[in-house]
Image 1 (cartoon, rainbow, N blue to C red):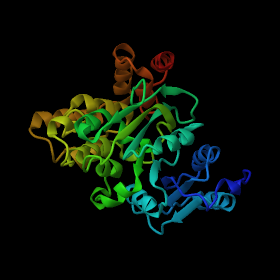
Image 2: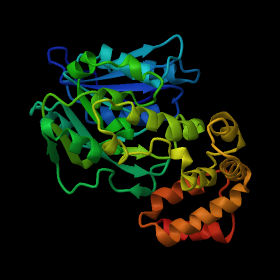
Image 3: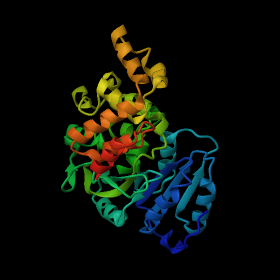
Image 4: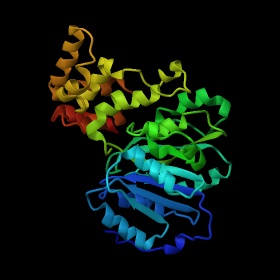
Length: 357
């Protein structure tokens, strides 16, 4: 239950809403207060918060009821049935009154000063604004990645630089919290086609070239709580099938450019499967459900099946050692390997801890 101080004067109906922070949530009662507090600490009268709850069964409704009493600028819509994260984000944008919508995640944090920076950028009438994010451990105590776009300064893409925009941003936009979009553009484009994809924003953004310029803000404005995704149990399906499917469904993007983001069938890459096995995301269940019927030839089937039942701790150890010895950015990948149910003990684990910083 919300127990913080109330500041109802932060919202004033006399102000036109410039920015709607749209959040789709489901069973995030343990985290959503931190997310909202990071927003409310810097809220302005021209900013509203829209929350669509996909029928949470935890204490999310009670928590948000407390916030609504103190903050009339929060609009909370609780669904009777869970219709999926894509549909809920679409509904949130539909409820919004702002000229722009920031599609914020329900367990991450907005950094201090972020809203002020964003409101200033909105004055330049961009079609989209993509904000950078830093990645931290699930308790925010350890920095895993300083930024995701790897830019030294802000960058503007003109509408005729559409190919460059896609190549340089699509991979980073797998994180929805980076997306700020004009509401009119969202509403004018086809969204239903992307329900169930987990990446509706990608479908909307790259459905066609942007009408006006696009800004990428180099300064991280969001802190990502890593290894806390609500779809962790669906990791294999999402990254081996859902993600490539939406990228390869984009008719406005050339195939040669899609290949730079993700292979058409990434699950055919043994190295990808090996890493997913080490993370605990690829097991015999995934083999049976997704791969068995798609494999060609006995040798390929035998190899992929063998990996699905290979000793997870051994695979985790091998991958951890490989990352330590050969991967430049170690912290991010080692975090995944250490949070795996196959994470090994003893010497190997201490080595990971040593090289993680």
